[in-house]
Length: 232
Image 1 (cartoon, rainbow, N blue to C red):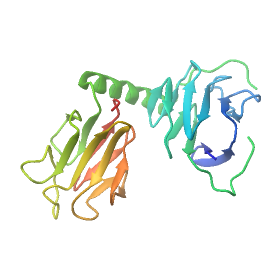
Image 2 (image 1 turned 120 degrees about the vertical axis):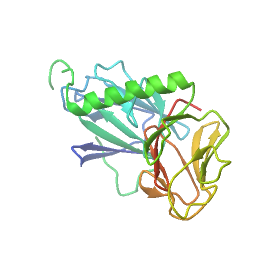
Image 3 (image 1 turned 45 degrees about the vertical axis):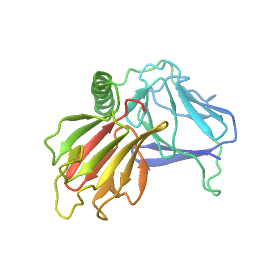
């Protein structure tokens, strides 16, 4: 069964495990997940479950629903996706630990003007502009690279120190072909190919392959890139 971990200011306040086909998220007590904050709409969003898939739908909320820092109207959730609603963070787990079984009003919705919410909106706007212009997903150079934006338009994009790769990276003890990003029907995947410990995703070593999510940090050697999802 899927699990949703609800956090407020980095503290876990609730773990929701459900067998329902649909759960509602909002400010009022009649929701399955109640987020008691004026930045959350009464019926803010819902998650629909069907055949091991989960679809989150924003109910035209005032302040929006964000998945992996991307503002969405609806989005298929993947394991460990991060959902931001108001001041709350929700972590989606495809399969809940057996021990984590748990069941889960102010008038008017306040327009959020917090620094975090503004940063999310600004980041989403910029990412949308970049991927719309590129017409595909993009790697954005963050550190250790002179590259600004790279369109992931090919089926395979290679990274390493060799002259023949698509993106040359910096660092010592790297393989000529250290990693590649593969375009598949369900999204993009980072695949480790070279020296151990030199390919990382969000600071964690990648030993084989890993699905990329919007706003992921890809590090190859000393070069760091941010992945902006524009759809496969």
